[in-house]
Length: 112
Length: 115
Image 1 (cartoon, rainbow over the protein chains, first blue to last red):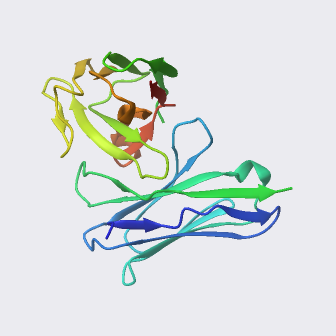
Image 2 (cartoon, each protein chain N blue to C red):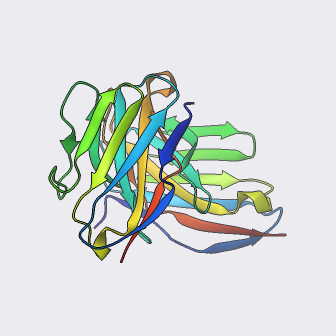
Image 3 (cartoon, rainbow over the protein chains, first blue to last red):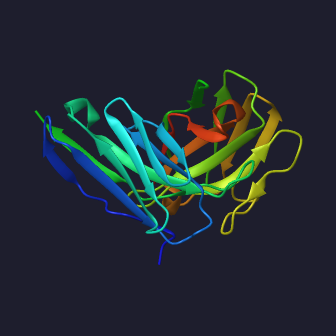
């Protein structure tokens, strides 16, 4: 079993829809949770990061962490064609630098 | 965040040859990392390269195959040696920024195809 599980998709939604992207994990020591966005032929771009449980909002994006269920989510409101990309979840332990474990990524396509 | 560049952006190489990938950052950083990204797989950490010390390799990666240099706080190279088609992948460097909670920021990647 992988430490981090992420549905690879692809996920196709119409423009304006609310998108929900999710990851589950098995390592209860993970404390920091990140979402990266990766456009085709580009490097991953850090979108959001959160510490421990709870929600964090940034514009149209909301990151949610439920440590009791070992489940994290990224919600995109009013999705746009420019949101079409692969979204990778990532997580690590706390304390200075710790190795980051990535999900395999979910490919999202927002159809105009 | 930092501006990270990589050279080359892509290359096609013959089996048995070596390729050196460069990673340049526009600010001084302590931690630099090299990853491999293969289709359908998660990013795999190859090694951590801190200035002034030997690179630390992850399980399954060895220095003879992936030698790394880190001559200063803004630059690093990764060499893929004695290449085989299985080395075809995207290679990414990243940096950890203390000002951003030690989170990692990635370069654009080098797309390598080995024939």
